[in-house]
Length: 557
Image (cartoon, rainbow, N blue to C red; front, side, top):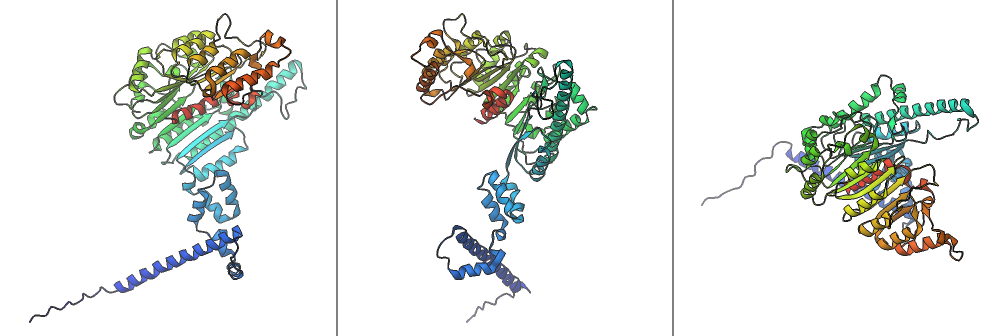
């Protein structure tokens, strides 16, 4: 008989000790976690005033003292609580104690940061603090620079019109010059602060900059005299351009790059700093700047060939050439979904329209992407130039006219309503004239008002905004009845509305009350004319309105 005996193998020295120590450590962690949860439950009962807590439990919590307070909560739990709060409430909650304040700028709480800054020296310390905390890890950064009204007539310390004649004009010119210099100096410092803080951020996925340089312009072009006084040797401008290129070269995950109306931040060589890997995965590219001198452009057709994954693109119209349209129709590129084009009189004066895409190029783009939609904004463009630009095959969804000198003709409005009746959803018509008694009438020498025909033909029209052009009351009622509840937004300034003599002669009916009532009935919602033009950015800040609309237009894919 054979007996097989199982002899256990001896454990290596210290194995039992290590296993026991691991179990003890694990139980200690669990016990500590349970204690924290019990303290949190007791704290919540006290905060809610929950009955039944018992005097003995309250006594125990009192004995615990500060250990049972909000400051003893784990950092992970505080961060989790903060994640449910909007940014203003987070800031207020962080003021409770130093521990909560330390948890405020946890990277997971700030994946995106959207800042709107006044170009004011008071903003600089706040911006420096925020960017120092978040600039190195934020994934989506959007910054808008909004210049204050430094250039308004009178203000604190301006004299308020006390001086008259030639001497008064000289004093006002000196004061205006000082304010211009202060605006430019502060603007450059704020831009530097933003760029320095994110220069090494490799997690940046969306980067958007908007500069309100329309306030820093004279007659549509930046005064180099003031810029040379603020930055005489050009060191700050060069530093800004180098920082921007450094950000692009260091980026690894950038999908969205948007720069609009910034002061000399983007150069024709900026995009070459992007690696091919980043350029190949870029989904949105926006380069809007009408201050580039001569015939230079911010991007060429050859450079565009690297951006094979673009879904949306925003450029100056004069930079969007026929060769670019051919590149976008290439089989290597994904179909383009959104195209925003800025037509500015400054660009048209310095650049030629001969290289723009013809109707065949637009047909090829539409065949490549059946969902392609185009957004055009025109600043002070002559009617003959618009007739060249508006090709029949453009899938035009939105158009915004803004003029200070040149008025849009009724023929242009009629052309738009006939060519883009299947696509047009937004139509904005603004003329910022000083003499409000002489608004142009688009219906002169016409059987039908072009705006009424626009509402009749464009069945998808959902937004119509008008200022600076005469809109007759009976035509406004017709527009409301034609589009009905599909017209979501109808903004017409009060000074743009006029009445027929027959309507004014009728003593039994108040023409203004009748207009409001009839338009409201047609739209199926309460309506009134815009009384204060300053309340709508579409009329007062056309650059900012276009930039924000372009952003939402590009994101709505």
